[in-house]
Amino acid sequence: MSSNIKEILTHSRGGRIILGESERTGCDGGRHMRNPVMFVSISVLVFSTALFLEGMASQEELVLYLSFDDGPGVVKDRSPDPADVEIKGTLKWVEGKIGQAVEFDGTNKNYIEVSHAGKLEGMEALTIEAWVKPYSPDDLPRGIVSKRKGWGQPGDVYNLFSWKGKKIYGRVNAQADLQIISSTVLEDKKWYHIAYVFDGKAPKEERQKLYINGKLEAVKWHPHESVNLGEQQLWIGILNEGYAQAWKGVIDEVRIWSRALNEEEIKAAMEGRLLPVKPQGKLATAWGKVKLCR
Figure (cartoon, rainbow, N blue to C red):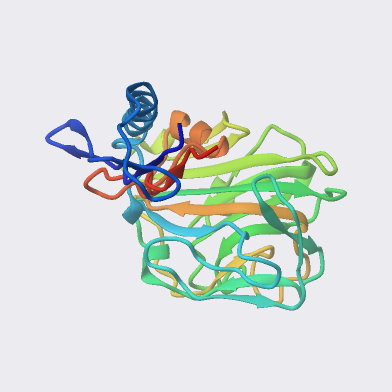
């Protein structure tokens, strides 16, 4: 029977998951009796999703989200407090790992600039994640996500890039001698989910972690308890403006969190299952307007 389930929302109060009210109307706008089986099935789906998401990632912890799904020539920060984003040069929109993605040609004239925002630095914990597909990977330093003015200059906050051995490198606070390196060697035109994690509250020996395709590949010592305050722009596809080399390949689903995601959360993010929820636990994605008409 035709139906339209409206406003199925979940939220948590005192540790309890509470399902919101639902109203069922026909596709013609008329009211009909609820189908118990259908309602219970959707309720179970929402309940299960809420249980998975609860306490895992709040909207406030998602400080940058570039999905690249706003159409060719448009990049927007989809985080709750969006930063200004500008395309430098010319970029190509292609099929991504999830929806659309951006293809970079490896030249230092074509990249993305995210304006400086306080939310992007100074945190005690950090997770940078993205899907990447390199073209003809080499041993040159090619930036994926970076926030700095230039190498050796004040204001170097964090860098995620490929370099020697065709591997992924991650670091915070310009600590090149402490940068973490993947064991994975990048292959041509192959998708990789990469996630760099810094946790200033963890034991020093475990403050940096690097995950490739949801698997922990490296753990590294770090002396600092927080990320630098650099007040510089953030770059996608290059280490910094004017740097000689740039990313060659595709980048998709760039997210920065002001929290150290754990392995389960990183796997969920990789699979597109980690959605930000509001601090109260309400799903950011509206479960209303689920159309079941046929």
